Length: 161
Ligand code: GDP
Ligand code: MG
Image (tube, rainbow, N blue to C red):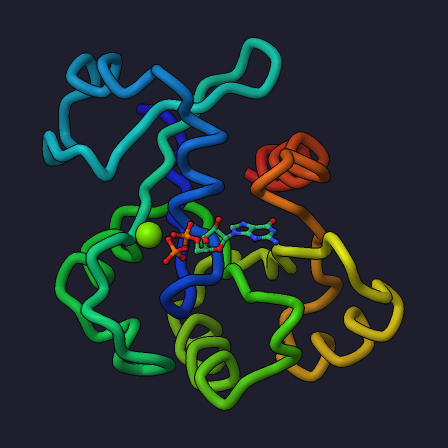
């Protein structure tokens, strides 16, 4: 069974942008892996020779914080995942919704990587200091839209599995 990595976070933080970048045109391969629902939210990514399953928790109906986690499909994705990637929009700083989500994700007992997306156009040192208050360790900076930091992120995540 391949490692399963779930993308979580408030609406609009860039989950689907990261999903598309990680999976490119590999969606079709998903059908080859039994035990997962055949659903277009799943894709296959690869770091070097190592494939993994990535799950985009899209379709959140617009709620922030706890609401963003209460959707059934998000619960299922968390249950199936070996690693949780918690994305935040770094330009928003740390929002109340992010604080709620961070607390819930810590409670799952699963490994969580804090992903600071949209780091294009900002002072990273200031942003990183603020994100530390989420209690999830060092944030990993990326700009999903350009791909900056994405392979460093996935290397770190897969090494931790
Ligand atoms: P989701 O709701 O979490 O799936 O977020 P989306 O992937 O749909 O992205 C929401 C918006 O953020 C879109 O307009 C994206 O183009 C934009 N976005 C995603 N990643 C980045 C990034 O790294 N930098 C910037 N500036 N915008 C981004
Ligand atoms: Mg989305």
